[in-house]
Image (cartoon, rainbow, N blue to C red; front, side):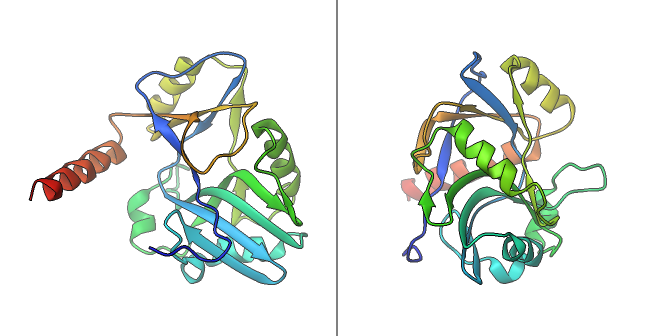
Amino acid sequence: MLRPVGFIDPCLPTGARSVPSGPQWVYEIKHDGFRFICWRAGDRVRVFSRQGIDWTDRVPLIADALQALRVKSVVVDGEGVVCRPDGVSDFDLLRAGSREAFLYAFDLLELDGTDLRREPWETRRARLASLLRKAREGVRLCEHLDGAEGEMVFRHACRMGLEGIVAKRRDRPYRSGRCVDWIKVKNRAHPSFARAELIVWAKMRQKRR
């Protein structure tokens, strides 16, 4: 599939069964939604899926929040979600076409003409937090835990019924494609785990035909 001009392929975390720990790692909640690369240049806003499909018209809250940012240009990476009343993201509501989707933003790739992908995660994170301090509800900062023990964070996420966590190296740049600087550990009891297993099984079945 052809990508839109200027589209940046997202960084994809590597799956693992155990959580890395150490002072170089930080931890984010893995929300159950659609990965979006959000782009704005001047007054033009686009929200793309990880494959480069244009979702802009289907996620008006995200588009409006991007339009309201006080920037000339920006590229933000995040997860588009719809949440239940208890605050937990619900993939089925998003897939059903709810227009209440908002973005949990977790990375900043470009700002006002400056490519930030070579900067370490902690620099990009600080710039993103500053940018979103007064953002509209359509774009929210994805919170992270710093200085914590990774397995403890993961167990807590599982008790809350969340999809899992993503561990990220604080000192690494942003790299498109599969990357070992981001490690995802999924809650095997979460519905998303069964969905992923079904997708893998279907792909293997197609290859055998």
